[in-house]
Amino acid sequence: MLNSTAQKEILISVGAAEFRAAIVENGGLQDLVWDVLIGADERSSPRRLGRCRSRLGEVILGRVQKVMSGMQAAFIDVGMERAGFLGIREARCLAEEQAHGDEDLPAIGTCVREGAEIVVQIIKDPMGDKGARLTASISIPGRLLVLTPHRSRVAVSRRIVDEPERDRLTALCNLILADFQNAPLSRAGFIVRSAAAGADLAELRADAERLAEVWQGILAAWKGTRAPVTLHRDLAPIERTLRDELDAQTSRIVIDDLETVEAARAYCRRTMPDAEARLDFFSGPGTLFDRYGIEDCITQLGQPRVPLPSGGWITIESTEALTAIDVNSGSFIDAGGLEETSLRVNREAAREIGRHLRLRGIGGVTIVDFIHMTAPGSKQQVLDALAAALSRDRAPTQISPISEFGLVAITRKRVRDPLTKRVTERCPACHGDGRIRSCESVGFDILRQVERAAVAAPGSAIAVRAAPDVVRWIAVHEDEVRAGLARRGASRVSFEAREEFRREGFDVATEP
Image 1 (cartoon, one colour):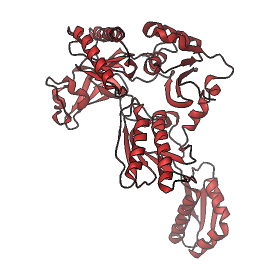
Image 2: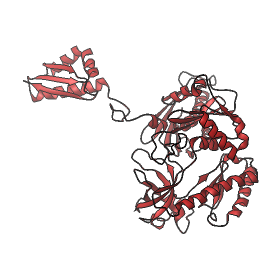
Image 3: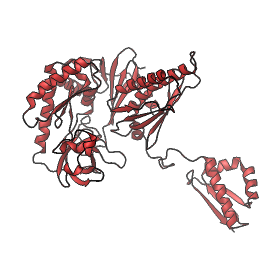
Image 4: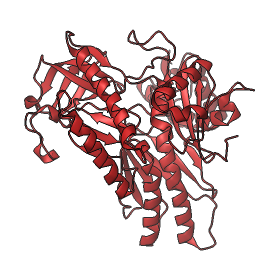
């Protein structure tokens, strides 16, 4: 059972081949970190917990392979199977004159040239037949701050909403930047992370100095090397999870692997000593994720239907172009009438949609078909609930107004394949379409082909070989099928089940 008393817990399970961290808040699974620890290339550390397959955050010295002026983009050799993609928005920091808006974007040729070496960072893992997405605007994340060596300004996380606190953090960071006026950090800036809320100058300065050392190490690694080469990798999964997820609201971190516990303690001692006391080792009985019901929650993420507290549900279905979510009230009827019924179910759906976009890693465009509402106030309440659910998301998101058809469009930055693609593979029966033809549909195709054969060779015997389940469907309707075929001039037809045929496959042949 999930712990319903703790405000926030981080449950970390490290298996033989994977690292998983479940973020549980008020008894509900809110986020899931999943990294594969095997199958990485020779870059990986031999230590089991050192690296993972994902290359997000790596800083690489690459070489420009091709500049595509028409696309306003360049392809960069970063030592992977496919060249990385660098768009103009991610390359414009390299232009001598900085553009301030998208309408003033420079030409890609003014930022990079073919054959030149360039330092880039991976911001999106390779997906399908596409190479990694790259940026030349490097960012080095710490626990409280993100160092941006090429952007000399201070930005504050949108999750810090208190204006006086935002102003205080901005002023403190500007004080720190005043000490960074010597090269190579003269153009540096910071992004203040939500974990920095309440931090004092000494804490911010300590984090900033660690990040400055990392950047200087990247520059040192650059010297004397030739592209393509990796200059910097992000932290190992356990350290990255603690850096990104552990905050003042976290009551405890439970880990089921002794080696990982020791790595977590070492990281806490280096960066957040007060957090070490919140680390717990899980020794059983059973497994950690089974004990807290996490495995069941993860299994449910593979199902298209998500139940709602009222008894309604949402259905999540993804295509190559977008994800569609349908909201259904089921048999629920609110005592307040149709409008109140729609409002309640839609608000419940909005909360689940925000959670499941995170948990399933769904990116790109999502279209939500909410239940129809007439009152403007009801529509606004649903949009507010959706915005609140998405506000906790680390990935940038945008929400459209509700259209006259009750549709809302959501865009969410995609950095990895969604969970469904990471745990499934191309279907050998349907060739990746996700659906397989029905027996009835294939049976109709066969009967049409038999009719064609009868027209081409009148009076001939016709032999049909097809998949067993299709032949069974024909047998169930044999009397009607044979009567219909006889009426169409095909009275001598035999049907044979063949195991080697896929559902859609069949053979129709005429015999003397």
